[in-house]
Length: 469
Image (cartoon, rainbow, N blue to C red; front, side, top):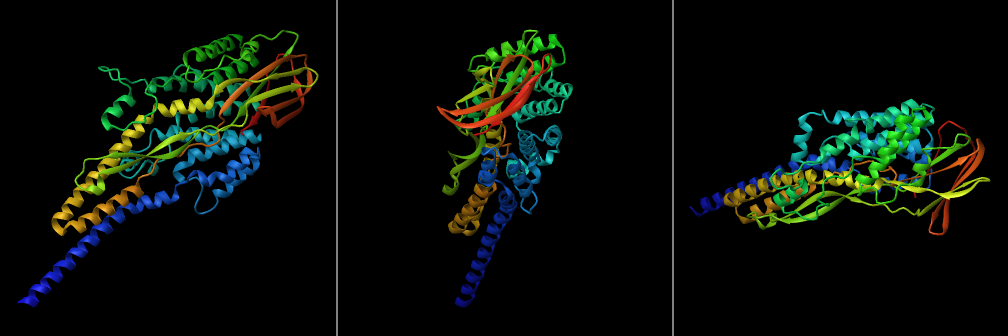
């Protein structure tokens, strides 16, 4: 009788061990897809060599590094991050002066952004189960805006001013992208007047949200300035006048972005003496912010103590400091002048990302809560059937699976500039040597030399300079 009882206990224990192993294996299998996705995810460290080439203004090397990184088995940009690939490559091609290649890449990015709105519901469902990295990256609002601006410059550099205006009109026309953006995030609770961020905090209790004001970017001075210049070049003075007026309106209605005075160069470009020619200069400096993962800790009232502290993984923007504090333009035989800040593009990145942050947070919160509820219910059931140890191991396994499966979506383009500066000078028509000096404080850190620049009367003479340090 004793031997039978002992044998029964041994068999019972073996069954419990098998059940425990089965539970652990179930959670491991649940985490496996996320492990695969996470192993393919790309952190900022993978871009160090490309970033170094960009900081050194060696854009051809940066493009080649991207090409090489896409040729192997583990590519730098995953298949569901094609938008970032086309944007980064398209911008670097523009900086390198490969304007046709840049246009092709930026147009591909724009097409994919448009297609992202019509993707199947399957991807959205998986993003609630695992994380946002399971779906195709849809692009940020600022990326959809600025790609048109740089493609407009591509068209201008290829001698197609009308093509440049088509790109600008995608932004500035009625029901264009800027108008859509202004309406996209204007929702407020009709009863309380609370913004989306206010309501998200009330529902989740998670603080440290970005500023709760509604998005304050609905007009781009950079787009308006280029549009005005392109219309002038086409002889459309009335449309140019409207664009210059819209530029002034951008400064008066978007104070989060335009904290600086309106550049005097914008007003000077409106009316050029008939006997003179205008040399306009635009300079792009620095690199705009990038996303990084942030851990936010939150107490959850679950039964099992292992599951009572949750970590939410959220994307946050990190600024990249620029060395450049002053830009001086020297025109041979005509003196020098400083460029003025037209648009803080990094501020636009921050403002547009801030506007949709609450939707990112609420989705992450719901997804994480669901995972923890399932884990808590499973651990409680295992405790009833197999004891405290098995329940503890189940909770630990579930916690590990959830931590692995959860990751913030930090995908985005990395090589948009941080700031846009403008300046100009009225000259006698002719050929000039132009030097653009970039300063950090009193120290000259870079010279951009342009020889034999033709400045013609009645035409758009737009000199572009880039230094992303």
